[in-house]
Length: 297
Image (cartoon, rainbow, N blue to C red; front, side):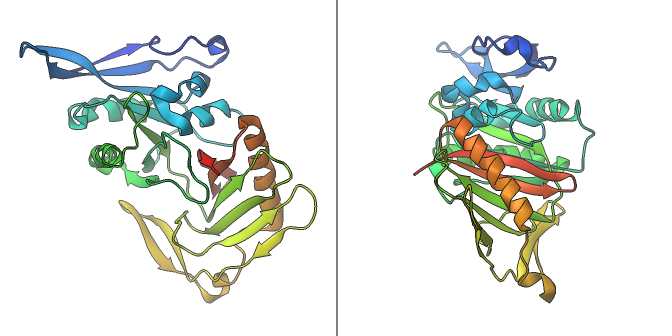
């Protein structure tokens, strides 16, 4: 038994709340449960929010990644994101049919729907520097999203990727077609260079990447990698393709783009007051930040 209600309450009091474009309602999905007498009751099963500033102070509810990303809203080039918060011990299959239409509706209110979306588990805690965390974002078509959501929640719970309140938090975004991608590692200490790892196609941490060390001033230290393959979008996910010989030993990003990414990421780290790892897709109209994770040294 499930039902769905819409509300604008249920979040911390935020003095800036009135300054946000808050027309999107928060969506609460209820799930059936049994009380101590064996009777049927309703309980909170999941919540769906657009990414908002108040989440910057909601670490226990939404986790470290969402909180840091929310604190940088308006400072990074990013697309709309639906935040799905699944309550502890809720059988996710009991709410998936209500959660996904609600989340997809939030995304398509401000942008026309696309054929693909990306779904992934948000990191509840800072990740180790140089990694993407234990679970990444995955490209999905609409028809495969219900199964993917159930699998993501199961994997997150199995790996202990839940918040202090026991929530499993997922991020749903439009898929960004890309020719190249980058993972940027930035420190709030301006004396430390920013590292940019980039490759053709989609981010795949196991594939070779060109590396750039970018100081505030001075020359970039660059290392060219041989990139025989690239990961590209395919029906239901991604696949690996062999690159033409002329692309394998060619830098996937130019120095001007690398400097721009480094400056953007450095300022984000200074604002957040901590080291960050940013996943960036180079779209048709410039860079789009897909993920912004706090890292531990």
